[in-house]
Image 1 (spheres, rainbow, N blue to C red):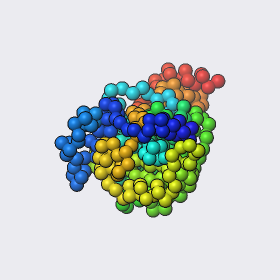
Image 2 (image 1 turned 180 degrees about the vertical axis):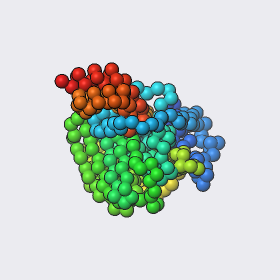
Image 3 (image 1 turned 120 degrees about the vertical axis):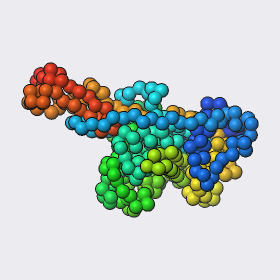
Image 4 (image 1 turned 180 degrees about the horizontal axis):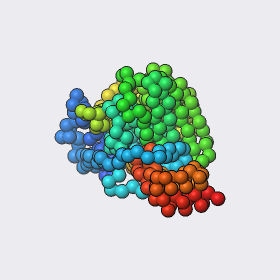
Length: 372
């Protein structure tokens, strides 16, 4: 909670004032732009005051239809591999994380918009509607945890479903690099609910700092993560995750928010549990689109927000040719020589981004020599 203490001092010194810079306003405006696809809760842009409307900018997030498919030797990159992610490019799908305070620093707000990232996941892995929704929820859940890590740390969420049988993996770095994988692609869910185990891992390189395991019993990802936070951090919280899809399962909205009642500290504002629940408990049953609209106006309910940080989220995979060469060397010299002489080459495909790496016969024989 070191960062929270520093932030709370900043809020106190500012007297609890709140404002939106132009850049931060555009980020929040992007959240609203994703929210207003809900026809039941349209936002009339004429209702926004002129000064705030200029700050919001209301920009659309870009989508990406990239990703290739193919069959080869699958390469599963586990925990610890995201740090060397591929640099973001203008075509890389992106999202936004916003961090703020309410009640003069007594409550922390984390807000995530990841529609383009979720849609990219759907396209890359060829996901059906239910799998795409589950993947979008997992991405948002991972991103909401990004504000709780620092330095080179990362958060990994793994969901192993027993009914229906499925596997969901999503991780996020401090820099906001996200990626996810969901199997099977044709997963079918009943009302978005499943039974299984949720594993949350906080790591630094190859060193595991924390592992939390939560049973999931006929629950959504939102409910499972909320239970995990309640039992692991022992901090009162309100969590919301919302996904909206168009025809064919295309993801047009994927976002969420997390409210946390921060621990009591001397000389800093705080709320007791009953007051926190009375002020913010209603968020659990509110429409995501309504919540984002309120936040775009600088408040949640009757409570103004103090904006602290806006951070870009991007899809970045940690695979590289060098990493996959190490994977091939792990097969042993005999296997590499056999692939070289019989198949005259090999293809290795990353299970996250579907990037295909090709190695010819000479390269395989060279790697076989490196096994000595």
